[in-house]
Length: 182
Image 1 (tube, rainbow, N blue to C red):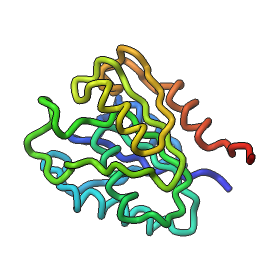
Image 2: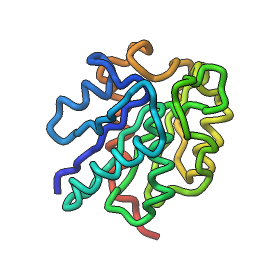
Image 3: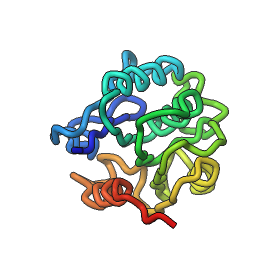
């Protein structure tokens, strides 16, 4: 079965040069559209993800989230523990209590602190303006995720100079590979 990935951009959406938009050029990637990318409201964002999952009910899915999309996945998973989602790549989760968190975003606090019902990888940067390293580390621990630290890479977006971000694709591919059974 060909993997199908749902892309979940963060606040403001991912522009055309963002690695998520580049990945979306592949037919196996589908963007979860939000009705309002600036005045983000948790229940609406979670409902949009649930709608995309339901439209793809006959597929095994992987989630590829950036920034606020990561928090959307955590809230969605807390509400929908039985799912066909096989795994999630969660890149640069933002801290809703951080100084840079947008004031127009509502309902994303407190962040769920339970294990996700599927394998996941949290990717962090040591100089992300939207989250201190301790926040990303805490998310990974609470969500039961593998943690990857890219070092000084900003918010892991277009401004980080990642282009197509082949290292990220490799992380997603590793997540998709079946793990050995013990």
